[in-house]
Amino acid sequence: MGMDVCGKNPDTEEGEYFRNNVWHWHPLWEYCRHVAPALTEKVIYGHSNDGDGLDAEDSKRLATCLEQRIENGEAAAYVTERDKTFAALPDEFCWLCGGTGMKAGSPKCSRCNGTGRAQPWEIEYSLDVENIENFARFLAHCGGFEIW
Image (cartoon, rainbow, N blue to C red; front, side, top):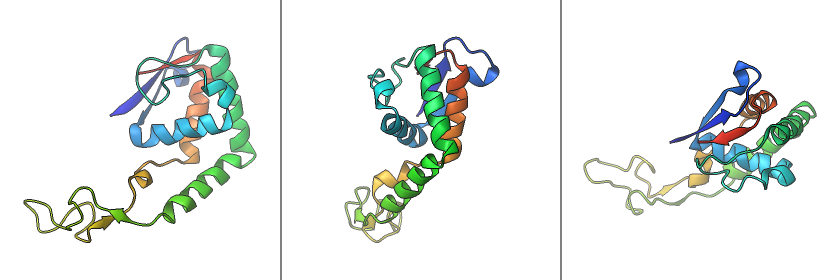
């Protein structure tokens, strides 16, 4: 599953369409909420594909906010700190095999590699500066957006 973010009135090809799978979209939108809460609180359904979004003016404001944090290094610092926090999380009970290390039809569970414990699910959701940059470029040219 993914999020298709469509420009309402794009002024360039870059502003027509932005796509992320859920593993990348959710942390990206959380980052946007972290750095621009006054803007992103206008989007009630930012984590679903119900057509919610921002108008042209607020999209440009969010783009500027993201661009500034990319340029001054705050975005990279946020990603680094997020990665450190996730790397320090302890393994947890494997929900796929029920902690047994075995899964029906195979000699060992594919999620925990037979140990009964696996990395927390949150680690699967990734964020990187390149994705933030791509979204900022889209926002600068989309003329407002809707998340589908």
